Amino acid sequence: MKIWTLEAAEKLYSKPFLDLLTEAQSVHRANFPHNTIQISTLISIKTGSCPENCSYCPQSAHYETGLQKEPLMEIQEVVAAAKKAQAAGSTRFCMGAAWRGPRDQDLDVVCQMVTEVKKLGMETCVTLGLLKDHQADALRDAGLDYYNHNIDTSPDHYGKIITTRTFEDRIKTIENVRKSGVKVCCGGILGMGETAKDRLEMLLVLANMDEQPESVPINQLIAIPGTPLADQTAVDPFDFVRTIAVARVLMPKSYVRLSAGREQMSDELQALCFMAGANSIFYGEKLLTADNPVPEKDLSLLNRLGLERLQ
Image (cartoon, rainbow, N blue to C red; front, top):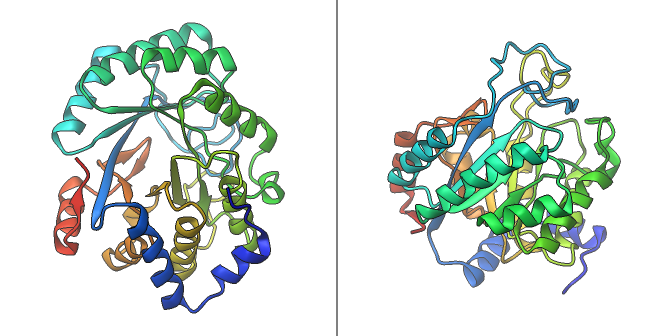
């Protein structure tokens, strides 16, 4: 596997914009069906009271954001939500819980959720925080396809965003997931005061893993009142697209998902992201606790662009 250097990534990132998009689209077409978007749905199965202090997150117990706390959902509620998502066109169902990491008794319930959703014929994904090796194995045995655990930003910038768990903690969880045989979903967030170099270094951590993540969500920060990042300036749209394009070139076979922040994006910006190689979106009115474009708006955009949903 090719080992990418910061110099090579910076050279790519600094190309004329249209040249970079052309290269990214060429790489994309060599590895994926043309004009096809994978649709995922993400729900919060346990909301709020998280002990971590991630500066972007309204679910942290460290901040007053007005979020309504909710306990772990009942299994039948989750299955009903999965059926609704499937009927709307989603092929992957993602379940997120606001924990530092799951207790084994809670994980047993999540494993039952995974098994029931898997029976519907959907791909399954969970994001539960830090994961021990035996917990990753239990999720695999329950039928889990993907585990999401983002690295968020570069190793250097990480300590400015979170102090309750380290960058290495996150890498260890990803390693546990990989060892279990479950596929890895891992990306980051743009707009947290990081530099372009930070963004590239984040992508390089992912691209230079022994096995690249099968799924790479790229989020645009949603500045939530009450969090330390509430007053952050939005990312320059062209810088956001450049980052998507570099992710596509560095990780040619990974699904690059346009994730949080789409509600604030114009149709034109989203179209540029698809041109740059993004080929997956989250679908539904909520992403955990944040607003997301309503399905009708997404369907309209995909139809106008001639993009088909992956079956």
